[in-house]
Image 1 (spheres, protein in one colour):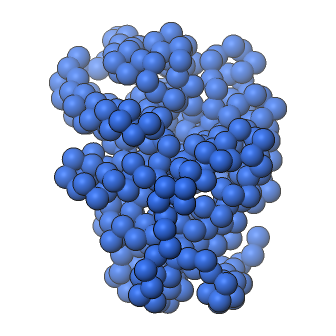
Image 2 (cartoon, rainbow, N blue to C red; image 1 turned 90 degrees about the vertical axis):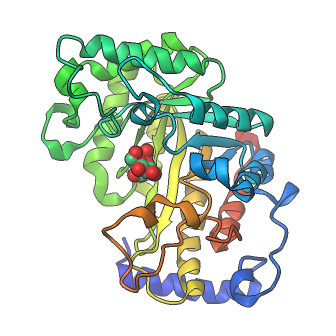
Length: 376
Ligand code: 9MR
């Protein structure tokens, strides 16, 4: 692995060369009008030509309140995922009660715009409903989990491309057998909660692909978690637990060399198990990249380009979603800790805070174009 300084230096040099030949991307700093990014020049059109679903996570409040944001997502995405609106906490105000209005608004929007939808997520240790700790006990947790999966999946049945059934269920740092994360589900339901969740999910909506989604499995030094995920899905496949895909979240850092052969061989192991892979939450945090906006964007874009070129060379990688589409609403700028030293907002996504394409947009689109059309 290149060290940080070496990586930043080569990325900077490439950026310099790119400035001369760039077909794009520098409008906000050179005041040139951006080249067209819509219609046949959009991410979704390039994705379609290469048999790839391309999209982003959608912020429900922005979709409701900012028409330009909705128009951008309609134009660029062939697949969307609610950033928060399908999580159990936001969707369930009281035991057994569900308020689907935000998620339904996204479903309507997607249908209107010919977009597929990912479901995110059913079983997670975060965003549990506020009422969860009291009424849910060891005695009823199993049934509560089954009921939740059935209620939510049946509400959207037949309309979801893939569901993140269990999200982030592995964390070897917790020191438990098989690298299982210590979660309320593991404690209340028991060791078989993951298998039970997937079996329940298959029955609730047989049309949805069932996905396991996790982070920190991308970089070379994250092999413990990557290996534990691989071992888990192997065991599931071998014992007949239904699973169709793995989501590699891809919250990357611009100051590190992008993930490489370790992740590539993970993706290939997935292919051997007949599992699809989705890049589910891509963003590239430029927290530790100094310099001007132009310099920072070039470093971020190089990570997009190299990472996606590697991933999209694998035939079983079927979708790429960024975690948001504009820097304006990225979760990374909502974090109180981990600010940039200069206090400026991060620029981790393909469109900037003014909904203008950044170099990352063009890098993502170029990477899509490297994909063999026969992988569809
Ligand atoms: O971006 C999401 C943020 O708005 C929420 O507050 C947070 C907790 O629900 O979840 C963020 O999204 C996470 C995703 O659901 C799972 N993988 C990590 C994402 C970033 O934290």
